[in-house]
Amino acid sequence: MKKQSVFERLANAPHLVWSALFIIAPLLFVVYFAFTDRDGGFTLENILSLSSYSGTFVMSLGFSLIATTVCFLIGYPLAYCMSRASEKSRTILMVLLMLPMWISLLIRTYSLMALLDNGGLVSTFLTRLGFQKLTFIGTEGAVILGMIYDFLPYMVLPIYTSMTKLDKRYLEAANDLGCNGWQTLFKVILPLTTPGIVSGVTMVFVPSISTFYISQKLGGGSFDLLGDTIERQFQNAVTYHTGAAISLVMMILILISLAVMNKFSDSEEDIIV
Image (tube, rainbow, N blue to C red):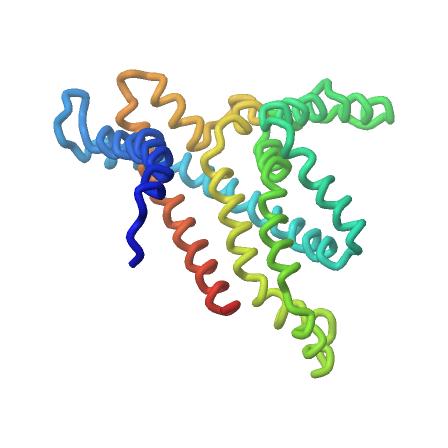
């Protein structure tokens, strides 16, 4: 292993300090408070008390899986069309996809509220057409729609990157061997773009299961997801140990997701090599 020079060590020092202060230290604090009581003594009570939040875990997991699935069903065909488009059309589609990401998530969520609120633009338009007023904000569907709207680009971009790297000779070989369009899709394109799919699924699932602002605004306070529960627990000086325990479970889920994504990324590099 090559020994680092003094210059390389100095160049890495700010990054190491930043990681230690703002990544490692907060994670250690979460672990500490998850296994201690108010007096600082070791306890498993915080972990055992999570059984009372099983409904919140199930709801958050269900919402995240639905949002991730819908993002995949929309994002995969979109990424495929983008990869097959001409260079000019591809650039336009990429700009249109990235444009909402240049705006703050808070503003995007408020914009969605303005459109879908009971007295919003969509509801007013439907009322003038003679339809019943739209009642959507405060429902589970509104929260899931908000997740899909905010996180769809995170699904499209990794899949699009995998498809642009796809060697077209594989498609030609599949065509020469008699595969039709659907067979080529399921037997050639899908397996070769699996790393992009896994990256996209991870990048949508992780923020979806940990979100709290989307559920607060679009859910109207009708129900709590994990992010809302953690925020409320940390706002209360008595129960922040429970919030730390929930955060610890979230950290484990995120680390598992990242490990799966890295495994597929390593497999992709081995194939390329």
